[in-house]
Image (cartoon, rainbow, N blue to C red):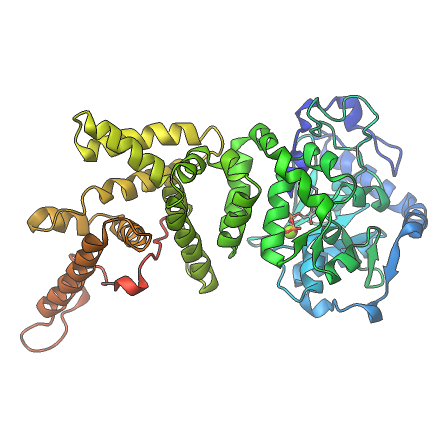
Length: 497
Ligand code: ATP
Ligand code: MG
């Protein structure tokens, strides 16, 4: 969510930063001393109490209020720390709601990924209530309340920017100003889908629905709030979110929210590569990579995220198979609570272009093992223009690709060195995936499967000492072989992060 909030805020003017609908006072500045801040927040908190609660009622006039008896969300299913935050805000006289994905997921009887809170307290007021609170964002302030490693994000209600006001969006329609505090009835219109715009009010445990989100959840459909064209233009990442939620929740995307995606994909090119990296991870590492991947293809968005991969598929649709298998494998691992590494999926996504390029270089006389690294450099330097991939993963990707050129070693020290390479597991899994997808490496993958098995049984034979007892860990540990894996269980990924 933070990315969405921070999106395009670089152009904020300081004047805009200081508008504050509730108190009519300036929003607190980053540099204010903590005493001064406390003073001001305490004053606001007490003097505004009655006015705020009164206002909240007014703000809710247009909403459908679903009382506790009429919905299925029980506090038992809400995270304890989220409840603590909600209650403390409420007791201090603020309006505090659970919002977004948590409400949606609880209504669907799913476990929420995180619990976001929205309130009419300003970030400074939130900070004054929680010792374990940090404000983040220099220009756009959000409160993070820390409980060990868990963070409950508390956002102040903000108002939707005014499209008629010049300077709020750029020429392509992207939001460049988005920082004015508002009421809950403003805040709701800034959210993306109706299903994500429900508020669970801790004051009376009701659900506040301004936009028909409850009905859309019942109908299992994603509906963009407002004019979908405009909303995608404001923040093109919403197109990826539509795909992600449709895959995750098994929802359909309502017609009017779906059709603009076909035309607006190119807007993703303006999104910073680091943000796209985060979004792509959410798409592929949440347990529905295959569905998300198919939807990216359907809406022709892959092209803007992984141009080289999309081109390779276009040139030869056979390449799709490897990617589908890699996605499915990732989903299975997540479903079984196994770790996954982005390096493996990214290696799969870029394999076809890297292999093609390596062959071209190899034909000019360069050894294949060197050619593949040259090809990797060329393909990745193009890729990072769309999606930045952290260096620790690009280096694993190189290892995975590089080892593919060494799997033809079947004897002696060279084969042993391949087996002992730190990234052997990931590379071997990758080899099996290639074999499964129909590449002509079935022999190699079979051989390496058996080689590991032999290697492992040799090791256990050696480590069983002559008196029949297993040797101690000191003597067997140094050169311990990796566990063999049969090809039937192949394509597991090795996490290396
Ligand atoms: P999940 O956490 O399960 O991925 P979520 O809906 O909670 O899904 P978050 O990214 O945590 O998604 O954001 C929380 C809420 O913030 C959303 O439900 C939505 O109301 C709002 N939001 C987040 N990103 C955007 C965006 N790009 N445009 C509009 N609203 C957004
Ligand atoms: Mg969330």
